[in-house]
Amino acid sequence: PLLSERPELPLPSWYPVDWKHIRRNFWIVYAHEVIGAIIMTSVSVGIDGYVYYLMGMVSSQLKILGNRLEKLGSEEVLGGNLVEKTETNHLNRNKLKLCIKEHQDIL
Image 1 (cartoon, rainbow, N blue to C red):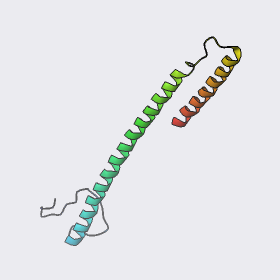
Image 2 (cartoon, helix red, strand yellow; image 1 turned 60 degrees about the vertical axis):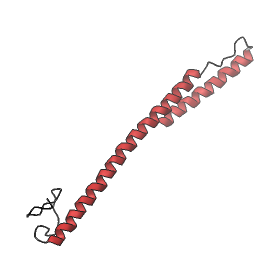
Image 3 (cartoon, rainbow, N blue to C red; image 1 turned 90 degrees about the horizontal axis):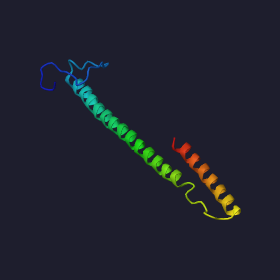
Image 4 (cartoon, rainbow, N blue to C red; image 1 turned 90 degrees about the vertical axis):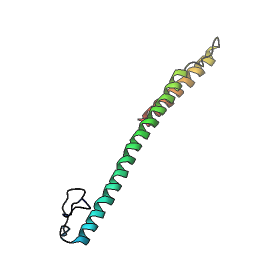
């Protein structure tokens, strides 16, 4: 488009100036479109990268939470008295509540 006799813009669009007959207006409009296209490309790449990053973070957080849930209850007292078992159940219940809260925070 730059070397043709008839001026053409990279993107089809309308501008309130006569860019087809006035060379200065053509270059201003052309620069506007090129700079706009570069900015939009950068924004698009940034948004796509951010979504990928968020998906990775959520996946990692859910794996960590899954490990905590697997370990929940594995620390039970074997052969202990009733008081120790009651305290262990209370601790496990509190840990489960924390896991539920963390899951809600992740989502």
